[in-house]
Length: 143
Image (tube, rainbow, N blue to C red; front, top):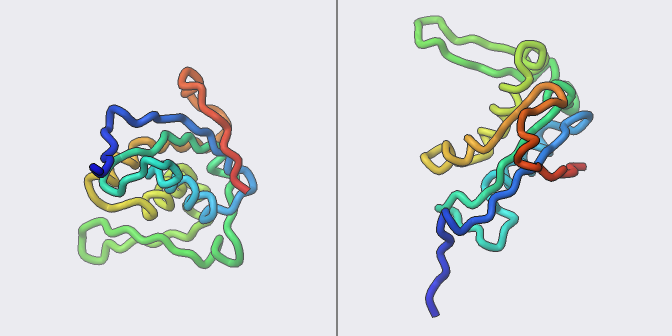
């Protein structure tokens, strides 16, 4: 019996909407990353992009537990000597909550060519409005 390998054209892709209002960021990011990869599908293969598209709404209303809002730090390097920049979770939420959610989910998918392809199927918005009504997305409940 031959081993079945899913082809990219044969994969049925769906669109999901996730509302992050009042939901813990890390718990939601794990589920969203699994959907983007396609891990819940019976056709899942680790070397094929078989995941679905995800629209994330209300990124500015997500929460974290404990003292992470003030203690958690995000670092970036400008490339110049002494150019290490540091921001707290609260500062990142005030400036760009979409990038914070994207960064969290990006850390949970592979860091290679496949991961870059998977990451393009993520659409994050700070409010509850999105321009993807034509794709008829399904509401995905994350508790």
